Structures are given as structure tokens and as C-alpha cells.
Length: 255
Ligand code: URA
Image (cartoon, rainbow, N blue to C red; front, top):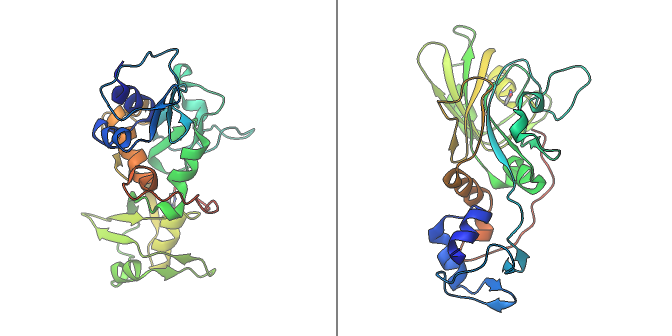
């Protein structure tokens, strides 16, 4: 298989970026630096490394779920059904866990993955990955200046600081909220702080990923190659940007 194809498939990096990664001398085959993306390597036998890390590892599993209401975002529970209980047997894996949380009654896009590092990156506030929610409110309760207060960033009544966020009024009693962090019950609490009361909440998108409209409630499917590549590029720009900085992520957030 061509070297660029192998790295693209195994690391989820778009082919275009793989070419520059190889040309930059970051790839070795059997200990020899290779700068030609078209070189052919054996899919078993040749040892390929990117930045010194072996790339031929079994591919991590990243699933998109249309989370249904009534299940909790956890791997196991004595009392409640969990999102993992809803994963079809073909995708079950001992390391599979949700990347972030949605409340029990919230529906929409939830990522599940076997890679703890990716779970961390998706939820980490430093990545500033936009999470987009649609909320239905109890009729007519949102303060007139709510958009400005979201845009300015607010401090909740218990002292929790919230980053500036997007608020857009939609038809009926619906609003769209865009956050770049994931604090506990954050959408409900921010809207509550502006006089609103959420009666239904749904996550539409995480960074570059939109919930697949073909996925019914409870539906699960693996990310497509281009979706995974887009997600990795969004959470690991330090790795794939030309001016690479290798800052480790900070502490976990509260999502
Ligand atoms: N904010 C909430 O209030 N609930 C969720 O499930 C997600 C974000």
C-alpha cells in the first residue's frame, strides 16, 4: 500500500496533509526517513512511525450516536440504562466510552470512542470545540437582552464563570446555543440565568461534525474517514499545523 494512504487511513489524516507530513521528514519506515509519499510499504512487516510513534496500530473506534432520551452518558450503571447499553454488539469494545456528556433527557450528537486521549481532547475547554445545541423553551420567558449577555460571557448565580457563547432565536420558542466549553447543565443554566426554562434540548453539532440526519434516535455508526480526519484536525491542530507546538492538554473540564 502507498505510504500516504496507509498513514491517512490509520491516523485519520486527510491525504493532502499526509503529503506535507511525509515531506517534512516526520515519517520513518523501518527506521529510515522517507520523504516520498508514493513509496509502497507492506501492510504487515514494515514498521512505520510518525513523529516516532508507530502508526500501524489497530484503528481506534469512533462512533457517532443519536442519543435518545432516558439513557445516561456513562459506561455502566446499576440503576440506569447507559449509552453503552444502546451500542450494537458489532461495535462493543471494553474501552468504548462517551466523549463528554449529555443529560439524561437531552438528545442528539454524542461521540463514543475507544481512545481515551481523543475523549479528553473532544471535551477539553482549551480545544474550544464548538458544541451547538437547539433548545425549546417554555413560552415567552427569555429576557430581551439574553443574546448580549451570552455574547459577553456570564457568571451564574453559584459563581460559575461561562465563556462568551452564541444565542440565536429561532422560530417558535426555540433557540440555538453555541458553547466552546461543557460545564454541568450549562445550556439549561445559562438560559435559566436569562429567564428561560428549557423543556427540550438537542445537540446538533460538535466542531466540524453534524449529527447525521439519517441516524434515527438511538442510531449509531462509525465516523467516516473524512469526518474523523476533520475531527482530528479540529482537536489536534498543534499536531497537524505547520508550526507544530506540542503543548499537552490541561486538566479535564466538567462536562
Ligand atoms: N447543557 C445542558 O444543560 N445539558 C446537556 O445535556 C448539555 C449541555
